[in-house]
Amino acid sequence: DIQMTQSPSSVSASVGDRVTITCRASQGISDSLAWYQQKPGKAPKLLIYAASSLQSGVPSRFTGSASGTDFTFTISSVQPEDFATYYCQQAKTFPPTFGQGTRVDIK
Amino acid sequence: QVQLQQSGPGLVKPSQTLSLTCAISGDSVSSNTAAWNWIRQSPSRGLEWLGRTYYRSKWYNDYEASVESRITINPDTSKNQFSLQLSSVTPEDTAVYYCARDDVLMAGISYYFDYWGQGTLVTVSS
Image (tube, rainbow over the protein chains, first blue to last red):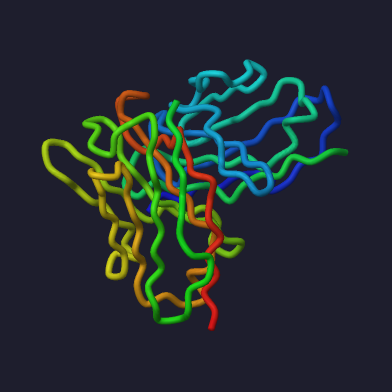
């Protein structure tokens, strides 16, 4: 199975800060990567797919990019509703696998 | 708008079978582009994909290797829903279980989960 390694495991930010999360795949997955947001007690919500495509209805402050097996997720200006845990997930090969998550909390 | 509504017991005894159902509205379990998945989440294992069912002129199932001998996912076309059965459960199977949809129309491939159920906490305990 492909291993997905996220860093950092947690980050503290203030409203308006720029936050960047990285995800590394254990082997090549092309651009077959998704990012999800999860709030406590809720299901994950798809934000970005195909590494950089924004899911319908998701604010444009969320962006994603890819470089080889390294993927970057950025919140350009963190809003109060963005404090949550974020997960990457590879969609290239069976079975789909997730990163361990990055918690974004209030500084 | 697709909605997935989960139902099933929150407590299962060790060695018994965990059974959950996911009712679909706004789409069809027999869709030729969607697949219907079960994913679970626990503190020790994180998010773990378990398996899926989908229809492409006939029914297919895919299962994660670690649970393949114990899992069954079945569609129910009469009720537009699908189910999960996990047999011989142990406390290690304690988790929040989610149903989720993926659709190849999104990006030409599967495994982007765009709609999720609300989640069901299943505790395995005597």
